[in-house]
Amino acid sequence: MSIEQAPYMKRPLNWRVKEFCYAHGMGRTKFYGLVATGKIKLIKCGKTSLITDAEALRFQAALEAGDI
Image (cartoon, rainbow, N blue to C red; front, side):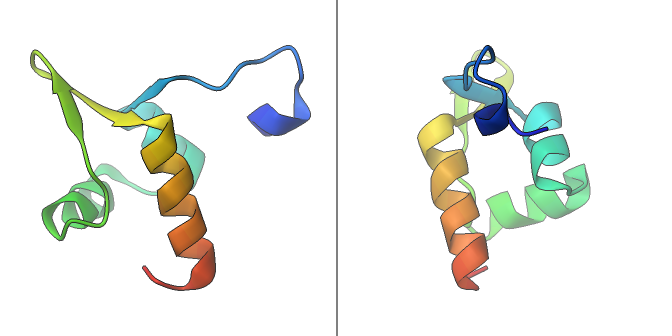
């Protein structure tokens, strides 16, 4: 069940790497490869790497369009 299908669940403002990878069906190696090539942009909060929800939506749209 996706977040959109469950009205009681809210989309996160920021995704942790583990949750982003799980939601997009990829491993950490693939994720960090996409970060290295600039296809996913990270923000940092101390030592924690985060992906904004806007970036997650942009990435998904690019993935669906075949740009990644």
